[in-house]
Length: 83
Image 1 (cartoon, rainbow, N blue to C red):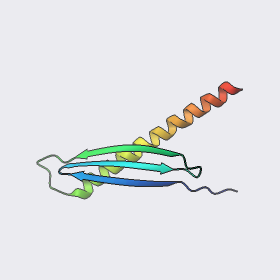
Image 2 (image 1 turned 30 degrees about the vertical axis):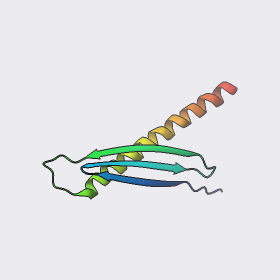
Image 3 (image 1 turned 135 degrees about the horizontal axis):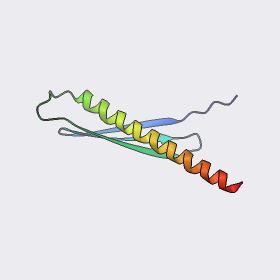
């Protein structure tokens, strides 16, 4: 049985009511994939930065996951064509 470790670094940038996130996955073979997320506080909402962080990070991780699935789909197509 082989165990692999992949790491995700999450970078959160806050500017006023905007929160932007870049999530960078590094695989065990040093492949890097990035996902992005954004959140914006409505002017009438209470200022609770953690909520913006949670939304933006969640969106970045969803984007990252979608990009990984697309990469796998392309890889499967490539392998299928090689047969």
